[in-house]
Length: 70
Image (tube, rainbow, N blue to C red; front, side, top):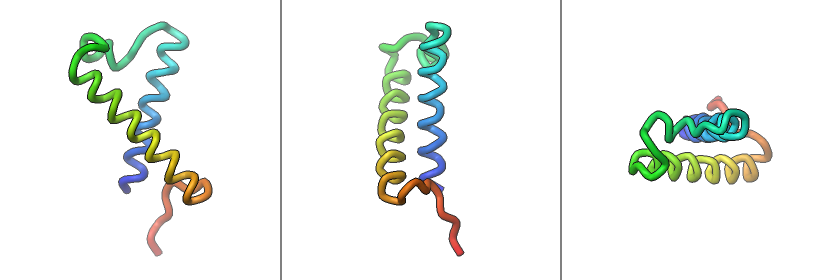
């Protein structure tokens, strides 16, 4: 379950980068005021850590993010 949560947090970061690339609009900074705001910086850190965690899980599990319990 934790793996899925980190995956969706990483996807939030991907959507943010898409908005920056297409519209020059930082979604997180737009919601919380600025990039220098503590909450924005905290979310950037959480998204980055989630992305690294998801990448490591995908590498070690050979492409599987979530394996249901049997």
